Length: 351
Length: 262
Image (cartoon, helix red, strand yellow):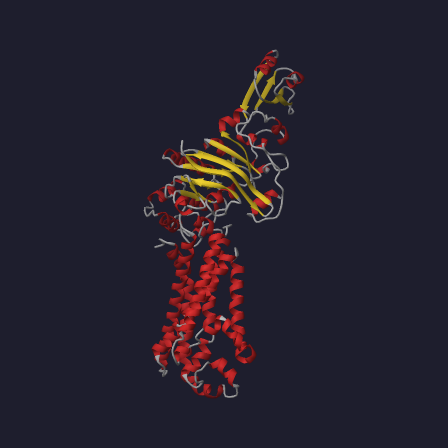
């Protein structure tokens, strides 16, 4: 497979503050690559270095085998970009923006842009962008990033402000783009969408890459959640004693137990089979729970993004990630806080 | 229509340019239009002024002539009027776009920074030329309608001769815009320098001990309507245009090297 995007020990410091440290990424042609982390993790800083908007303190970034610092213009010709903090020319209409954007890529045929607008239900391509809702602006932003059918789409939080139906359409568009050979590199803190469309994901924490793998690989090393309902009393002590069960608890119902389990289920099934079981329920943890496993309580993502469906404390989930069962592990080094110039949301999140 | 950064910048400037064309065109028109009715009063207005003071206000023109009247009523303020347009436009070019957070989207496209700066500078330059032409047209119309006895071609050229001054302000404004990531700070610095230069230049006309410092000010090289009574000082044109070019190149150097946060 051809590597489309590669970084080698890419680092960015703002004064004493380290926004990105020794980042090594390899993104291959035709994959949808999720770059995950909460606000302030260094996602946008990394993306801006890939586009030569900001310059690395050390390390290199190559796109299509060319150094983005030396060959910025020719590299960017093959890239479509949607920024995280989207701001568009509010005095233009979407149609005018498409024409302007397309002209800079040498594209004069607006039919694809208008087709995307229609699919994403941009309300009026002739109204001023300033008069559009935030959701519609985001749709226009997605269209302007894809209208020239880029070979690499770099999308920073692409589904922000979009309703669920439009998100589905965005996923379809990205999948179609991939089928036509476009590589998609997108950052997100909405893990459900990464779980749904990504071939591979990378998790970045405080500027450092902590895990890279396919969604399946990440989930395979992660615990499962189980719920067992008994006709009689729950054999809580027996279940808690089983190797691999890290948390067993009863949530109000005296006949039902919730378990977090890793490894083989055999021992649990054998213990349960000695009792009268009414119901047995097992599910994989979501990517979000895996993600939470890489963050301590203090810097866990906000509650608004937490949709795990479990009442497990973060620390308990974190314990369930076996440190010896990782795919590509890099050491987690404490990043000192400090002064420096950084986008507000990143600074706020770090503080 | 918007097929380049140049065209997009012209589109953004269209209302500003139109407003300045109307405003300054009408100003020039009315200055010439009212001249016949105030000509007699002008004759003795500056009789009591000392030589340097009269020189400062009137330039080298005879105060009782349309040329002298134009110097007082139009050419004295013309550099400031043009500077307002140029500072508004140039501060928006880089710092303004960055403050609006649209610069990052623009620079993520396959355009080099020097090209963006050059096309924006060219568009603002076109705006400058259009405004001075509108002023010249207004002045010519005013003179024709009011029957003012003045060389129309020379008068129009005297107005257009403010363009080198405009190029200096444009270059300096772009330099400020490239340095700062806030439009407000870019505009403040550019305005501060232009106003300070204007005031200091006026001061040196009254305080003879300061005259030697005059040549370090850009205002010294502004022609103050001199082409109306004599000929254009091409050395001054070269100094102003060259300074503008130097600041433009500095702006490019700064812009190429700095990071884009918005």
